[in-house]
Image 1 (cartoon, one colour):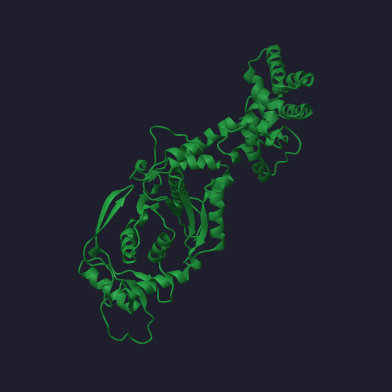
Image 2 (spheres, one colour):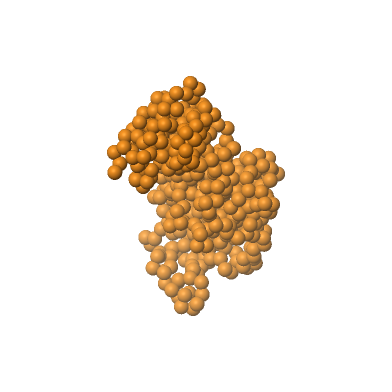
Amino acid sequence: MKVRTRFAPSPTGYLHIGGARTALFCYLFARKHGGEFILRIEDTDQERSTDASVQAILDSMDWLGLDYDEGPFYQSQRFDRYREVVQQLLDSGHAYRCYCTPEELDAMREEATARKEKPRYNGFWRDRDEAPPPGIKPVIRFRNPQEGKVVIDDAVKGRIVIDNRELDDLVIMRSDGVPTYNLTVVVDDMDMQITHVIRGDDHVNNTPRQINILEALGARQPVYAHLPMILGEDGKRMSKRHGAVSVMQYRDEGYLPEALLNYLVRLGWSHHDQELFSADEMRELFSLEAVNRSGSVFDDKKLDWVNQQYLHKADADALGQMLRPYMLKEGIGISAGAPLSAVADLLRDRARTLGDMAQSARYFYAAPVAYDDKAQARQFRPATADILQDAAERLAALSSWDTPSIQAALDASATALGIGFGKLGQPLRLAVTGVTQSPPMAETIALIDQQDIQARLQRAIEVCRQAS
């Protein structure tokens, strides 16, 4: 039997980190076993589902490179099929109409609570054959078995056993004719021949209900694998208050999709002590047996480290192309100046993200309009003017504008002035870049036009002379 997995997000917001990890695990499991990966949009909540959220999901899947073999399928386009199945369950006696009012249901729950029982529907209309009360549109409830147990051999959590007496008769179609989640997901998984349901463990409580519906329909039960939650640093489920954001925000900040996937695959799964995985390695090595049963803490610093590893090993030309849109976003003109690949290559070891890299790259294409305030007060003194002037003259005299020639000129300047290189390098860096941190000065200067360097140094010299 061919493996078929599905990722089934609800388009009521952006695709978050937890959803992206679920999609990744479904994708990897299907790819490892030569199976098929299906995308299904669970948009039956018409009030909360939006086209913008659907597009955000599709964009996120595309950016991450999680190619699906079928879909996207939309539940909102399958209502006729769901109603057909509900009628089938009614006809077979596995479902019934319930005419309880909201007030009656509230009373049932209150009475159960008073008896220190689980507040739930008590099956009032389960076996009644009397005439329904007028003016009330019924809901359709599934007639859950009252005997026996549901056994889930979960591929991650192990065996889970639920007594059917713990389950009430859930609503499978509301009074307005809209099917509920536990019905639609069962029908979809059955029709789409899903063999493995890989999803977050917040769905564990739904699983025994879904298994009972599958059995009532005479359908095969898929393998279930419930993934542990992703946690914030406080050990609680990750949410917006922990900084959980859209997958596309990571793109906008300049994380590489390969790095984000690498980080996500290690949130709850491991292969010995290996930290970095190529796409091929993930597809080859991933297994549900190696997924942890406990939750994993999302660590921003670890994600940054992984992203830096990918920036470090990227091809320089490719890195320059990836950097381009972030430069444009920062409003930095790159039509003139150093090749972007050379700038990216020089900055890669100091950047956390492509966004950081773009911000740091500004001085390669435009002279600083201001200097770091504290550094200016400390470095740009009247005596510094002579130091910068000597360096400027030696740089102006160079016939070869490359890193070795520039480094030799700066070394000669420090020697002639009888100062350590730091006494020259620190004010020189501020004059050229406007900031206190940059790659080595000779390499930085080599990527900036020789005349531009002279203009920057002369401006800094004037600032030094005017300092009190």
